Length: 130
Image (cartoon, rainbow, N blue to C red; front, side, top):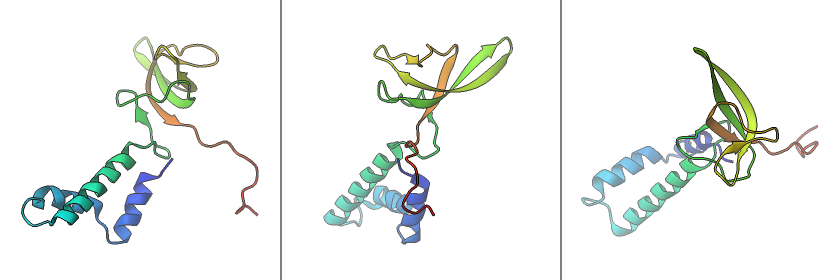
């Protein structure tokens, strides 16, 4: 997983204003940019689009946007309407072969609204740990 915001901040700190370059490329491509520069900016735009589609650290992905790969466990938020109130639950679920959300204990009794990838498992002390 990547931290999109940190990456974009680092690019901006290097003097690369990604949003400005993308806007300039769209606005000035036919007027002033040379062929090579246009290709470079087009490539940069594609890279940025790709980065933005990647799972984000701590970032919820709405189910209306996309679902995770089948059979891959993810952390989900799902809502259960109980009378007039909505109860919010968090569970580890996966999408089965029938495109349904399921868990080891069955299906959630409500609507899954968002999900995020699970973190990597803890493997003991890291090199930087003291």
